[in-house]
Length: 155
Image 1 (cartoon, helix red, strand yellow):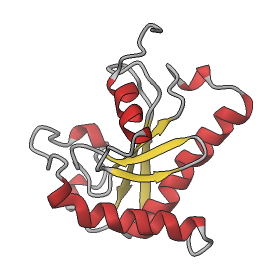
Image 2 (spheres, one colour):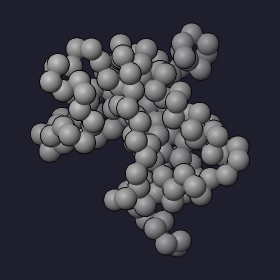
Image 3 (cartoon, rainbow, N blue to C red):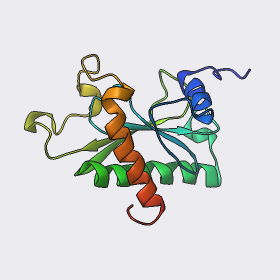
């Protein structure tokens, strides 16, 4: 097995390939969109590449362009579906050395004091953990938004 090939991201992509991840939102050219856990900001999603690579710089040419275009597409769909005013994007890979992008839709309805916060300023420990029961409606809404975008009815 390759070094780092047993990260949370690798295991999650394996589950997605087997249709065993209840937070699944969409399959895009470069990978998978899943609902983030915890939902520190409503609609927070992750883009996971398939195949998994260690970092963005491990992708070249068309693969890198596809991942970055898909990341922007996730933001476009979230803006529309969540009534967003902007999107925060983040790629780190410091904890899990496998490429994944965090995409956070930001809305005008957020408390004024929190609107300028970067996502890691929120209390992640107190945030709502993913549950198919609690988040099923949101997952369905986002799946429909990605389906509409794919068929030309949205972003």
